[in-house]
Length: 207
View: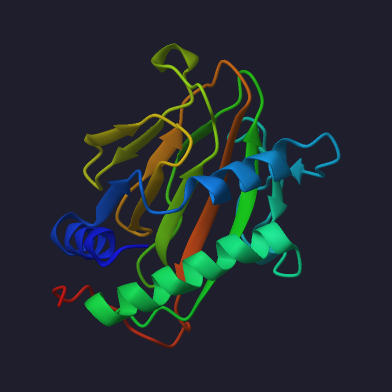
């Protein structure tokens, strides 16, 4: 990750709370992650909604299957290492106090979707930044599956095509979002940078 890209990402997070970049990670890593999740032996389970005691499956809201990244797996470890470098870079530039990172692969089958939702609510979660990395080669605008991001007023502010290598990052408690129905298999890695639950945060200007 170059300082130029990291500086741009930090500045966009500070100014608008979200950023989309297409050159954050090397192509070789994108290809390795794609092969891992599309391999016939890949094991994925139905994704749920809610957390802890409220966690349950509801396919009227989301239909994806997931597999949590394993730091002991060589390919997963490479991605997690890159996200650790990103965590340190963001903390250095924005003083967010990001503490750790969790992430999972996601597969949306044809006609799959995830209705509008938020990843965190102010004062109720330690998730600070949401990330999404897309792993879909030869994706066209007719294939659907876009990520739609809204502001808290309900206005659409961004539509992201899930093309391989595209990386999205945004403040978890400020941007409701949805995955619209996809017309073919759609793969990604969703993740969250977190703080200790007792730590307050704010986005300070980039250095």
